[in-house]
Image 1 (tube, rainbow, N blue to C red):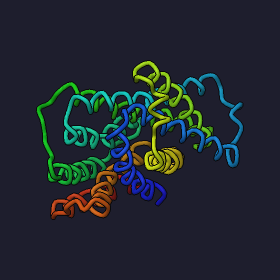
Image 2 (cartoon, rainbow, N blue to C red):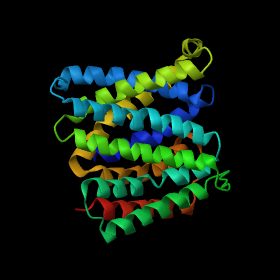
Image 3 (cartoon, rainbow, N blue to C red):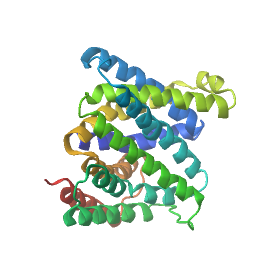
Image 4 (cartoon, one colour):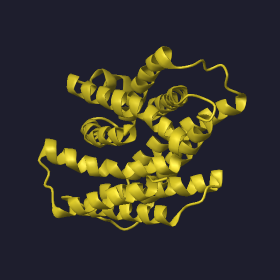
Length: 285
């Protein structure tokens, strides 16, 4: 239930981030969100977390690797890919995320992939495709380097999830999320300073509405959402947890129809049925 609610928040977050990136650099937006999220996680860890001193050097190394893939690499590769491909192509490639996570988990932890899980992934992927391809102004372009970068960002997200799964065996998901986002935010800030002209001036020029969107995205979607995500990986594994991502585009469309009067068609109903059926097959014990 916590993962399901988090997917609802991430669906709303799509619109929030879209609104921010219309006037600000996408990497600058990511850096601001991660810094605020790190502060939120620090407060949560101070109130409910445990000490960070019990980690071994190998676990600290895994934390840095997770931050590189899950936060820094995913944001950098996604931004690079989106600049070279259409939004429709990017959404379709990102829909492969649950399948990639399930496959990598099977390889890393030697867990079997059941036929019902493969069928569930195919159903969910078909449902997502039905929604994305029938959106207004959907445009599928020929395969390009941008699609490769988007797929690499999906791989990075899945690899970061594997690190989280290993780390949460001996540590609390809250502590893991805190360190991963602090290190990832630092990497992003250094990248933004090196690649964006006058980033401090852009941040100081943000208005109240932009700060409100950034705050919502950072606190609920990134901060609290990352703890729920890590807890889900600890409880049911990265493969089954990643299957919940299929709900994000569905909720994104629903909230788009609710707040921006975007049309809802029969294809959205077909997509919803596909995601529901596919998710049930994948998550079922």
